[in-house]
Image (cartoon, rainbow, N blue to C red):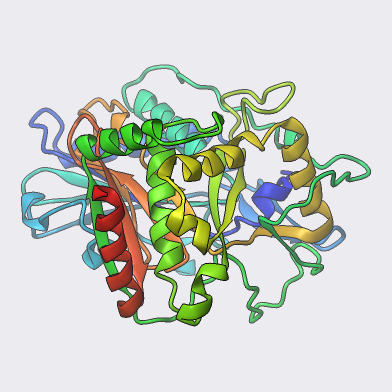
Amino acid sequence: MFLSNIDQVLNFDVQTIHFFNPNPEFPPKIVFEKLKNALQKLLVPYYFLPGRVKVNTETGRIEIDCKNAGIGFVVASCEYTLDELGDLVYPNPAFEELLTKELDATLGADGHPLCIVQMTAFKCGGFAMGLQTNHAIFDGTSIKYLLQNLAALADDKPLPIVPCNERELLAARDPPRVTFPHPELLKLKIPIGQEGEGEQNPTIFDTTPQDLDFKIFSLSEKDIFYLKAKAKAGPTNGKGKITGFNVISALVWRCKALSNSENDENNLLERSSTMLFAVDIRAKLNPPLPTSFAGNAVLTAYAMADCKRLEEAPLSELVDLVTEGATRMNDEYARSAIDWGELYKGFPNGEFLMSSWWRLGFNQVEYPWGKPKYCCPLVYHRKDIILLFPDINESNAGVNVLVALPHKEMAKFESLFYKFLSS
């Protein structure tokens, strides 16, 4: 199966945990059997899922070998109740136990599976579903549709969303036409799929071993309303779209840029800062992609400003910059970025990435035994990625901002966060 240039740079695993309260009509043993049967049925419309990533030696590109090698399904139990796990919102290193990341070759796995599901029963009758998938085959939206389809099959219902597997819809043009500068992308001349295993490319996805503090900054519905009102009241050029994501991104960008201690304090305000964030391009292309497109249909948008402007400008002006980054992503810009990937590979390139899980809606999926109590990514502490994820209450009106930074930068970030939030 062909993988697009967007898919090419996302060849890594993503893990999520989905927690479920006890349901007397659906004890874990029954749920696990239903999910196993549903997963087997799911492999028909998602025929590539039991395949494996391989490198095409002629093109230097990765692709999916749809050889039906299978996915992983693991059953586990835990001596704790769900309540004893404590605050599910707070990133808990113990949640690593709720996922299986590798399968032993003796279990019949032929290479690394594209999908592994672990079901863990708690003493109370609740359970967790740990899901690991390769990002090269799904983005957040297509994972949500996969979960909705899984829930329907577990309830013996037809698929609500038939996946569109035509990944060639995002193929580069021939010849490639890069019609915009792309400061959000890093130019690499290494042929796709031919990087050395020990090679370290300076991309936003690189992990750097650092001693980092991490904190969750919770914004209530009232806080978000206040930020929106503040942006609306400020001077603006009229381009700013005052959404929850845009006002939160503007606030976090300002704090992250001004807390950076890698530069001399005297030169800090002269430094340029670039925030990256994902934009779904399904509806932005001409013609639009099918909503059910199963591959990665997100590209990296950017907002750029010097730190002096980030410190002094009103919130409305920063919201304008974030909005500009999203509206820049029209059909021609998206096609240009995809063509850039054909020529230069095109890893994201910026100071940090805002990764939003806030509105993906994983916790709104209706299974036969009910909706999840909470869904969250398995969190890695990375100073170059700031996560937004929903609160645990039903409304999802609030948002949690997970930040990981060296101690000195964290103290500065925290001080700036509450200063800018209340001023």
